[in-house]
Image (tube, rainbow, N blue to C red; front, side, top):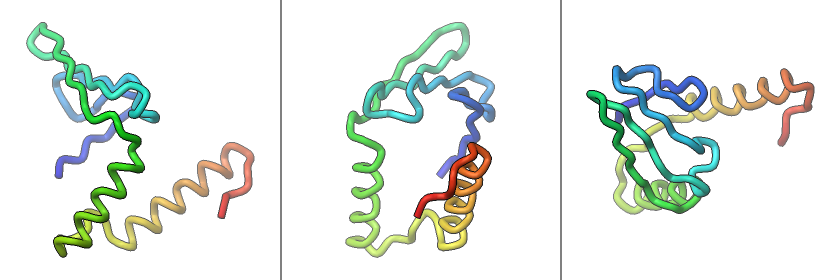
Length: 95
């Protein structure tokens, strides 16, 4: 699995810029636009919500016995990050 760090909606790990026009709401605009060698390529991905894909991946992992892509420590770190985002926005963490 290749992890790409994104700043805004642009990849920061590639020599060819990749733009995801609606990275926070992929079900509204499911394109990735890649500029490479002076040409622009547009790829269209699935049109389901990201939650639907997450559920499908969970179901597949449970059915096949494959390893989860993340572990409990990753999940806790993610939850802590979300809580901090709420705090910095002046809101109370949810949950």
